[in-house]
Each structure stands twice: as C-alpha cells, then as structure tokens.
Length: 225
Image 1 (cartoon, rainbow, N blue to C red):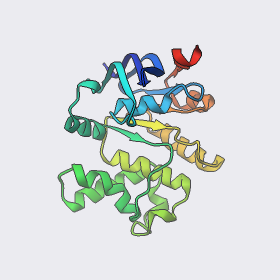
Image 2: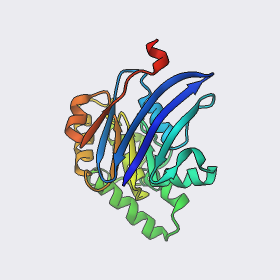
Image 3: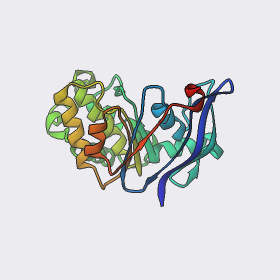
C-alpha cells in the first residue's frame, strides 16, 4: 500500500499550469525525497497533499494521501487528515509560549487525554528528536530562546507528538548553519523506519543520505513553453 499516490497532478492559476503534470507514489514506511529546480512546485505539492493551497490556485488530477481522496474531502475530514500527515514548513513555526507549550500545541487540541498523559507524549517527542537533554531543565522557558536548529527540531517534535502516520518536510535544513543542519539530519535519519516521510530538499546529497527513493520534478509544461 502506498502512503501517497499522485497521478497527473496539475496546479493551476487562471487556467495556466504552475505545477505538473506530476505522477509519483510514496510507499508506506519509507523515506521519499522530492527535488527539482526552483519553481518546479515542490512546496506547492506538499500543500496540495494536505489541502492548503493558497487562494487563487486550483488543482486537478488524482491525489490520495493515506488512502484518502484529498480533492473529495470535506473541511472536517481535511483537518483530521492533517493530524495523520503533518506538514512541517521550511521556516519552523514557534508560538509565543514555552518550550513545552509549543510541543503540546497540537495534541492538546485533538487528543483527549489527561494533562499528565499529554505531557508524557510531549516529553517522548522531545526525546525522539534528540532535544530532551538540551531543554529538560527549561521546559517552561520561552521557545523563542532556542536556536534556529533547536526550533526546527521543536517543530518536528510537535508533529511527532500527534503520533502521525506520515510527516511532510519542506526544506528541513535550508535555513540552518552547517552544525544545526547536521543535527537535524541526524534526527531525521534516526527516525527512518518509524514513520513515512516525504522530504522536499534542494540538496540532492542530503536526499541520498536520508531517503530510500527520490523523485525528480521538472518545470511545468507551461513553464517550458
């Protein structure tokens, strides 16, 4: 079974094709990389998968995510799907809250459990991304005090706390210095086999290190004309 099946996907604006046609699959349990030139639509494809296309854009073709027809989803079903397949953006989102509060942000809205159980899940997620030892003594401190690399791992921990079936990563290390990027990459490598990942990156050598398979993207038909 595939986690993602995309067939003849096009993303359009005013009748002009911005992305596609694109076809590929992502097997369950594997790490798949998506790469291509600037403007090929890598980030747009991630947003299409979870029903978050910007206003003014439309999509056609077949897009199935975790055995769900994305284009046929009702808004409530899409919201549920986004907890099963979590998009982690290129620039890590850090809320004006504590380190712990940031990890809890998603699960406290969608998971019915005691406060103690939610905290356990948050702490386990921090450990899973290798951040626990760095923040265990300052869980109540502002997340804004973390380095950029730590913020990226914090965003990943927030996603993992939801216990998703899949994580979509958009350029997870592009905004980081070499040391922070290596730390995030090490974290991602340690998660191989535990989740299904789709990773967008311009760094093909990184994708070769992290991924089971890679999918090249070309510019859209309209862009090539």
